[in-house]
View 1 (tube, protein in one colour):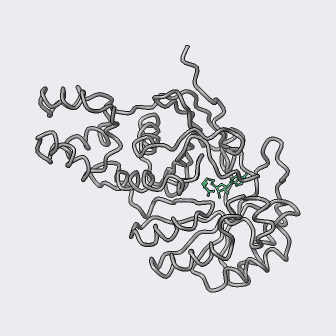
View 2 (spheres, rainbow, N blue to C red; view 1 turned 60 degrees about the horizontal axis):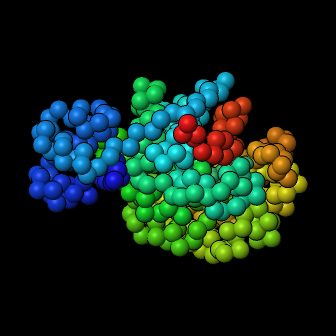
Length: 344
Ligand code: SAH
């Protein structure tokens, strides 16, 4: 059965027209789904009984069950959601001074195999549908009775390995008569799937693009991220330059600092050379050690030195605040702790 939350407003209008209905019904259904957040068609009381019946015959409303919820001392919440097929994903709610941000998953598992990331080593099951991406936000808004202002695609999965559904989910999130989360409040983070950087540049979506760079030399980057063997740093930067030129938007480069791996002064110098002149920002993340992982955090002193070197040499850099590390909800710690929700 089709999930009604998979449709953006234009596509839902087309669906309804195909069922012989007036397109304005789509607006009513959107309000029920994204403002009132109903869980069944029966609650859509301004829709005729007949249409409700047709809708029930043709669509499901995907509603996630919270299988587990953990709360950090800093207020960060991690959710384990059960999907309708028994798979599970994690999402994280973070509180910032500018509002509430949800870090969403885009896939059940991940194929990228980054050596420092806890999502590596769990089997890849499938990509999430647009509705399943959007549902993470709806479920958290309902659970917390609050409004989410920002969304980052930095949970489990590679968003550019699920490009169409991610972009469609953004359209659904954007709807001013729905969740009303503007594209400027949405970030997509990629390990560097180059063709999709070009595609996004040509798309005219106002979201922020983050690139997981982590090193400015190919040898080190390939040892951390296998994707670098398919698209190396030079190809990646060329695509980023195209993106900036096309969109006039600043790119955010993520750089997780691991002791004696990518955190020396030489690495900072190489990074400056690589990014010089680009409209960009560097987000430094103290790497989070994962179970059996070989990378350990740089010292804070070293991270500050690294940041200052970048700033002194014309590359704006900030150190990312670490949230939720006590509940394994910090960067790279999400791993779908329960692989499958037991059905019995
Ligand atoms: N697949 C996407 C999005 C998910 S990861 C991507 O690669 O960008 C979100 C961010 O967390 C990425 O920048 C990723 O490199 C970073 N990350 C992963 N594991 C980490 C760890 N152990 N410590 C710090 N950051 C990590």
